Length: 343
Image 1 (tube, rainbow, N blue to C red):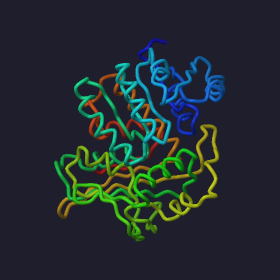
Image 2: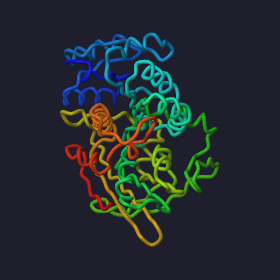
Image 3: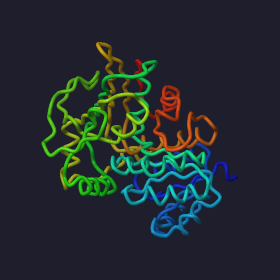
Image 4: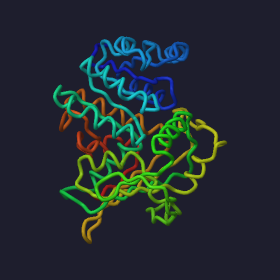
């Protein structure tokens, strides 16, 4: 298999990384397995014959260069992305290949846009951060719901999770974000990110059937607060999370996800309800599926496929809804998501 179908996965042996490796192979790509732990890379390579393990560390640029040598693109699955994103993007720019990551960390995504937008655009490079359940999916749904509107008053993204068993990577990223924020919470209002010390509100969101009305934590801000307003003219982006998911995420003794099917997915289900409002009009886009970590993999792999085949709308650092045809992208995920699109 030639370079055109060879994709490096940094953090390949992590929880999400393993899903990404499996989806790459299903799509006819040859994954190069990269990460810090040689033993875990070798074990993963044994499960995926033909996939080459290449140890690499973010504090060793030469090792990253070796990991990316001869590849067509890199997907970064290794958090916290506050630590890994910049070094891997730098390596991708040196190698002249596209970069995609699955970062849910708000500040890490802000950093990527701020630090690399000019350089990536000047080089004609493609960098797509937050190409994941948080950040990417919400952006694609909001962009689809906007349709032919050039601006809107507000975007609401409600996450209906039946629970949330976080991975160690999720917990580590959360710790880094809390430290960077000084324990404050964040929201996107009046066209900018705001950091607040007060408690978020609890309210009710009327999810569509079969979920129906549920108690949610309001202003539970995720990476969509970065990706959506990067390219949509919307001054308010509000997000919500079901209280049971917040409770499990916050509890220190909640176990990691447990696989329940042959694909390795957990029993977690989700419904993402996106509502865009302009004046008195409202548009909606809804996605349902199973396991937020597992569904991140087809999002990231489809992004790489489209970048490598030239199905993009811009270069530089771009969010999912900005660089891809959002409705077409979502329809391509029909094996992984059920969609109800009104945009």
